[in-house]
Structures are given as C-alpha cells and as structure tokens.
Amino acid sequence: WQVPLIIGLLPVLMHAALGLFFAGLVTLALSLHTGIAIVTSCIVGIALATYTITNILPVYNAACPYKTP
View (tube, helix red, strand yellow):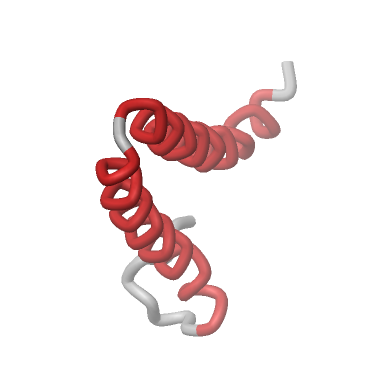
C-alpha cells in the first residue's frame, strides 16, 4: 500500500496546494481590479517569502524552532 511514501508526500502536496491557492488568488484579483491585484500580490509575496524562509531555515540552523520531523 506504500503508506510511508504517501505519508511522506503529504507535506509536499500541502506546499503545492498553498502555492496554487495563492496563484489563483492573484489571478482572481487581476480579473477584478488592477489596484487590488497589486496589493494582493504584495501580500502574497510577503507571505510566500516568510513561508519559504521558515521552511529553509532549519537546513542552516539545527536548533531552529520551525523544524519539523
């Protein structure tokens, strides 16, 4: 049944789902109004940068509190 493989892929699927959600949010904002799209893109960019940093930080610092098993 490959249960360990499936469980190992769940975080990857969550990362992909979050990225697709943000892409859809920006696309929707673009279709509504350019000003809203710019603000939404800035907020999404900051959120994605924070999300990426907190996921990469444990690689460089073993005592990082954001580390997952």
